[in-house]
Structure formats: structure tokens, C-alpha cells
Length: 222
Image 1 (cartoon, rainbow, N blue to C red):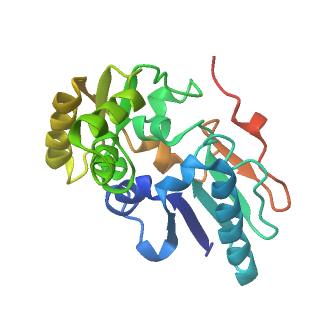
Image 2: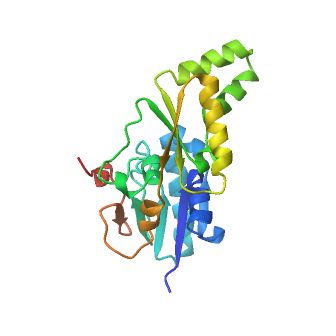
């Protein structure tokens, strides 16, 4: 019987544990905030891979990440295969396989949020609350409006998680507070689930032991 382990960004925590019913013991979740510094993300991911390599009994390490600002480039396992979605980022994976023909989703004017992103990540409202610890309302509000000034719409990805109704209220209130549009889009767990299926797929990357992940492996679609 194969032994596998998953190292994933915590934005996938709800989808992996509740949506795909994967056991917590199989997963290692890392803070979403590591995305802010891809170099630190790479260091922490390699550290976790090395720790798993020391066990010496894993067949495969699954990474719940995309290219993520090159934060996964250079990662390798000396003992196990690595499988990672062939995606530039987590949002595309949360949207599902119908977006797999494109490397990324255009987010020039759209700010996407999901159950895991709301639970564990950062967003405009949380940043506003942090600013309030330092400034008055007007200054804090101005700071966040500057941060999100290129966005027109908050979009909630609905992947059928139990928190959906609460997430809906949260994003709607945030949209109204900052004067942005609110939309919803139906996501899918199929891209995430495809990582664990023993079939060849152009939506995931398989890296053999001793081989490092390269950015050109993520080239896909038009």
C-alpha cells in the first residue's frame, strides 16, 4: 500500500479535509501569509519535504500549491515523487478544471475569496482591522482603499463548503463597506481531486525523486 503525504497552503484546508474527506494525519498545512514572501515559502516547503524524506518510507508528496510567484521553483525530494497542480496559483485550482486550459485567472479587477481564504488568509476587512490598531477610521479606510484601488469586484468562490452562507454574508458586507461590486462564481474540487487520481493528466505535474520543480513545467494552455 502506497504511503503519501500532503503539504498544502491552509487556504485548501476546508476543501481537503471536508470536501475531499482526507484525514488530517495525512496533511501538513502551512500559513497562507507565506505567499507574501515566496523565498520564505520555498524555504519552509523544502524544510517540510526534507523532514518527510528523513522518514524514508513515502511514495509520493503532494503539494497543495500552484507556481505561487515561483515559491515552489527549485523544490525537490530525494526520496519521493512530488505531484503538484499545473497552475500558477491557488485560485485557479479552487475554480476547477474548466479553468485548466489557462495558466491563470485574470484578476486585474477581481478580488477572489474562498472558504479557506476567508478562514485563514488575509483580505481587505482583516487588513482594515489591523490598520485600526494604528490609525483612526479615516486613515485606516484610506490605506485599504489604496491597497485595493485597482479592484472593482469581490468574488466569492462557492465550493459547497459548510461555511458558505457565513462567507457570503462576510464578503457582501466587505463589498458594501469598501464600495466594490459583489459576485459569486461556482468553483469545483475536481482539479484538487485530480492530483490524487492515478491517471496521466495535463493538469498536474509529476516530478521524480532528485529532480527539482522548474517554472517552465507550469506552461499550459493559451
